[in-house]
Image (cartoon, rainbow, N blue to C red; front, top):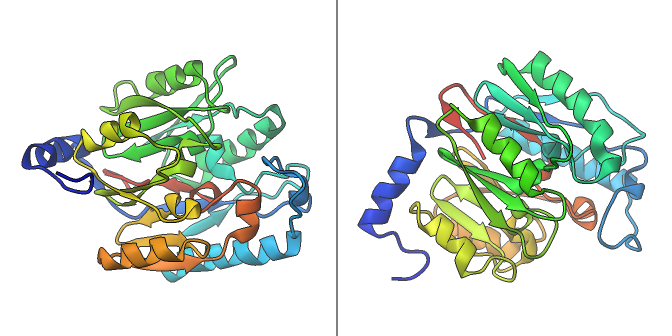
Length: 290
């Protein structure tokens, strides 16, 4: 049976993995403006020039795409002394009414956490915020929710202590934390994301059989993305955002019957960022979001 197929037993496992909650578009999304110093952001190739004005235009396009889908978008205060602040997904992991304020793996990014934590408390239904402490480090981009599972990637930004802190934060919620090793790239979600509740797209150069087995084991279908940028998509209920840099991935997902919306985030790709990085999704009560 191929990797994309779903065996009957696996289908039952997948339904069990969903638990009592269901997949839905988030109640709202938090975003953060592009810093005037975005060109100084951390990235694997500092020699690639970044156009800040173009990044701002693309960021507006991202927000407008969310709003066209009828989603509520709230903006966190800007910080021009935080070049990476637009990638606010890394600063928190929201689990129903509980949120974990992370300790980003890059020390220069730790100033980004407090403003997002304040916004989570002020703008969302989250009632319990847990603050991570060193030596634990974790970037939200390394955490992928699938039903009642949180897959956490051990990467250059997320360590074992960070994964343990996530497990502690999830304790009592019915959510199980599963650790994976990120063998290449910045984050787990640089290499794989959900296109829908039951379909994972991934970068075959990064995820091998061992990692895929964890997803197949709960009944997910998996699809290799033809482009690296196609491994990071943003599932929003019945719709999915796909990068302009991944046209073949967009066509494959349309063929799956998904409502695909293409967004240009080319300047963010230069900063090792992508679609999920640019927002913090707040799930609806009783539901889960990617």
